[in-house]
Length: 300
Image (cartoon, rainbow, N blue to C red; front, side):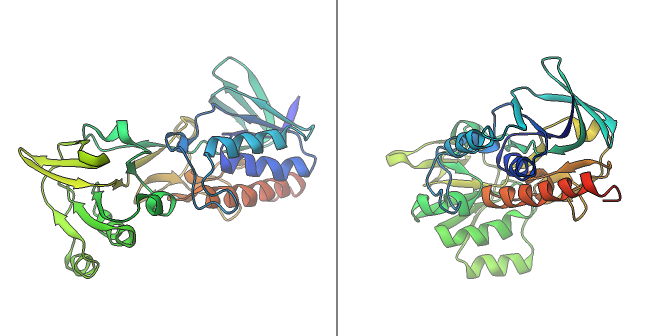
């Protein structure tokens, strides 16, 4: 059977798109591995009417609601390959199944690549964080660190300064220019030069950020902008056009969410870049609606 759409990724963007198509009585299959990007965080924040709930609970509710629509099916497997073209796509999954569809929506999200600093990965989503809008309020002010990966860290640190007293660990990233230094000074951001060699547990739940033998700084939390990589081999396999952003390459899409391959759409983080649950969900709604339009109007 040929579906109207296959959605690759059952996160906030993918399920939001699926809801629009389900309510249009279109046949949809959602492929999902159950590994959302925010799985490392215990709670989601800043999502209207869902503030403080575990992200996994929100997704479970969404999935239950979608299953009430008889045209929606879920298959828990990774999409390994995309064959074909518009109106005649097929997706091969890791368990050997093949699904056919007229349209495909990629909503796999990112996999975050942290700097190679011992101690970061173990604390990711707990006291090593990436989004002050999602987690900054809960840190509660006080000494907070920002770990540089690129020159964009200076701008990031100036923003994070609304959530604490910031130390920017330059970590051998490009030094801020004069304009950035002026803004950082105005925002009372302190610069700590040198390579960060480790992040360890300090007293009273603090983090100790090591920058050399006997040199450490205590912070309550450490913010970092990791490199975000699209969590799928399909864009490279199909030669999709990319767009460079401060956090990494995202998929180039037009105003409807369509990628450079006709009939293949992208939604959520991999189409937006820096985003959160609200933005990913909204983008999923928009892309799902335009995908539906394309099923009706061949020129779209």
